[in-house]
Length: 402
Ligand code: EZ4
Ligand code: CO
Image (spheres, rainbow, N blue to C red):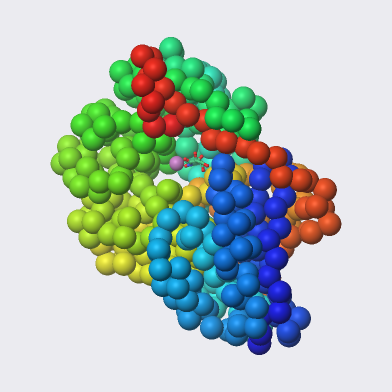
């Protein structure tokens, strides 16, 4: 089964997505996601100029060999651009293999380990009252786990707070929007949100919170301690993780569970965190970490240290990644939770998919392959629009982590 063509499709049904479609001489095709929010065209060039020409004529069945060819073959290894390009090829080849085998991808991976996949939604509001109401709407929709973010007095455009109601889309302008940050105000305010949420809804719903790399390790430790009474499901990206050792300090101070890894690309970014049991959930997903082939290795490594998966699932990961991740989630023995920021109807129309939501859970569906397709005609009606992620500054103008 030879690869006869590979095409990169860029579309913007409300936000930008980069998709790879691989076709074979048997007529079976596969779809992969290569979206890198705010830097989309770098991956487009990487694929078109450096990967696609080498795919033509190759045996589509040899997924592992292809992964090694693209990873070792690039010589430079790793990085968000390279690993997304590899992920797109890998996802498409797994899609093809499962279609040829006439199986849903989760069956090919070893079969379902559970009936359905626990997901968490994103609730947010300009202030605590609004966020409490927003969480209530998610509970009404059946969600069992909800991430809560709120505006902070004195902070301009706090992370995670949408302008609309249920959708939050951070890449909101062609050039980076300037936002501000104030750590003391945040450390004072965040526990009050979770006081209000536990007061109102009790301990039934799982609550999560994303710190989005804003704190230093000792500040993160303080936040973790102050949120212990609220029994969080996790706090996420409490501090930047280039220095994996930084998490040891947080760990020594708090039993609040820690999640990290949505910006990691390979197992090497998380090796120390996992083998020293400095985290509880690893956030890498299919598109960010080199596809199913590499993510499966990460999950198996994490399982040895009782670290569970918590795949990134923001809207900048296309429905193709969502579909592939749900098959992975249904299989992974050490699955923890899946983030689920629902896509807009416009996006869903371009990417018809087999996965479905019910009662706070997603199921990948039983279509052969990963179950997500692209409507190319419709995709062509939504041309690329430059979009950047915001930046954040402290009050004195110092650049900070957005
Ligand atoms: O800000 O994916 O947990 N989710 C997140 C996301 C990220 C976006 C950046 O493109 O942190 O909302
Ligand atoms: Co996050």
